[in-house]
Image (cartoon, rainbow, N blue to C red; front, side, top):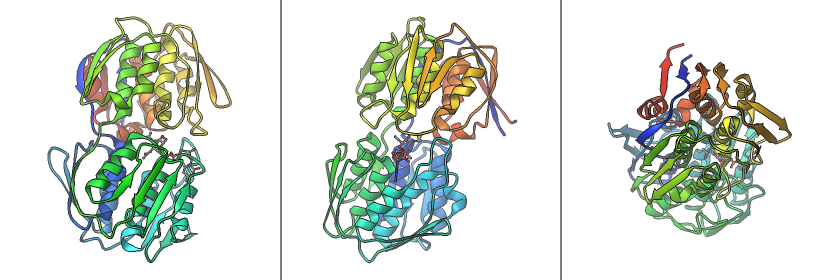
Length: 419
Ligand code: EPZ
């Protein structure tokens, strides 16, 4: 298994370009199943999860061509199977996003239940309840979701929990239903809005995306379109925190700071100077050590759970102590024991981690357990004394495009070794 070797002590400086958003491109690729014509998708990040989704759609018979600029042309015309097998779904939970589109367009689907996941049980009950409310017959048997429906009917869906992919699955299903669907307590993440914008370009009638109440007026068909995916706010946030940890000065191009409000607020509290315009954001720590911050994760626009591990790494070497509360997932602190092996002072009680900043972390061999935890261990390695070895970095490749090349461009000493 490949590893990343990071020599600590660098100060990140310079500028890089952030990539398209993983959590926007995955639902948009699933949405291509709804179109009765070809779609061109641009600004696609080169990620393992994108490759997995293309493999999943390809197995169904969907035709996909990728050009050298990572633009993808997708045509679901030749589709012949309405089946998402366990061996693919177990590697990427977001495969569940094909369920709504398959059911809405073709009236049936057989999708493996996503298995467990490192960060939590992550059930899909709200996806299934919503589809049943729209008239689908759903049976879970042998680890698979067997779904059938003549034509889905619009319904009023009140979500017990704010669920991003749940909102996306039901919004996609509702685009071809008969009548109107209202999703109350909908997820407001920018990636939900990006999907809605793409569906509207395909001919869907959607209002309220980005608010807690989304209204979808069903139509008979959706056509193909060209769509460019929004940039990745979590990748942007990760590089901003990496810069803050090392006391550096970095500009991120192709960013969309309007989606980073809660992250930028915390970085300013940590002592960063932040400047931004419509499509770039710049952070300058003036070589100063960050101050500790307190965060509590919650659905957008509150502080994102996908940035919790990165800010935990910042707090490990920041001045003072801070509290990090994870309220979205039940087991998203696995990076903490790895950081403690590097000398971090962190005390966990329930879903809160209390950090006391130390002057220095000490490099150690550490193991990535999930996507954002792996990123936080790389950030810790940037400022640790010595060479940190991060193992199981297949987690990182799922969600960060060329992370070591981008960090090297900013002055980090980081390289990938085969095993
Ligand atoms: C999306 O996951 C993201 N993934 C996650 O990003 C992100 O952490 C998460 O939203 C929260 O922002 C994609 O968009 C592909 P949820 P999702 O459904 O949709 C409970 C990353 O690192 N829930 O919003 O799977 C669930 O248990 C990944 O990029 C139910 O109870 O998350 C959790 O506590 C990690 N029943 C809460 O809702 C359901 O049917 C939020 O989960 C669905 C969810």
